[in-house]
Length: 233
Image (cartoon, rainbow, N blue to C red; front, side, top):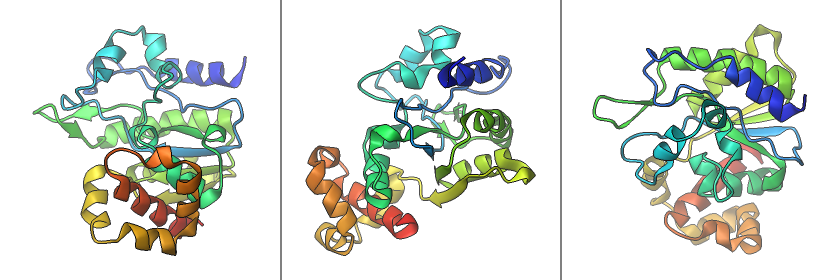
């Protein structure tokens, strides 16, 4: 059995019963590329709220249970991890660690998504965090990563609990979660050109991959990458 199939098998053993208050009941492993270097970057959870109007939730609901587990492996145009798909994490990791995106495993630490009573995105409950840690303990045994970068406190808590007291031999770093609201609030206080001057690692990635910076929230991406370079570089 290859690594991908082992990861899928682990998740198949942890599909939640319908009484759990989650949007999709299947968990899902990180996307592990063929050229994986042993590093994993994790955001917190998929946003499966009603405001996510791009058809992704409907696409998930139309899949078989096994394909919902394989969700990060099925779409060519995006992975399904928003801060990776909008290039925020991609730019930051390339800037701070000099790693090519196609060598990095990517996922979410919270393996189920929840919504509030109005259908808006909700933070993972303690029960979802605990269950995610239980699954991640098995995933980590199969993956044997050398490094994990956790974006956000929720991600770090889940992986710390999954690691347990045996101190599995990987390094664990925490950076901020690049949520648009949080980044916009802070990034607006800085000049983009000044950030690029002070963080030449980010400017280098901009020269190599200007397409990663295209679209809305460009300054957010520059600021977040500068933050990650400051924390990890």
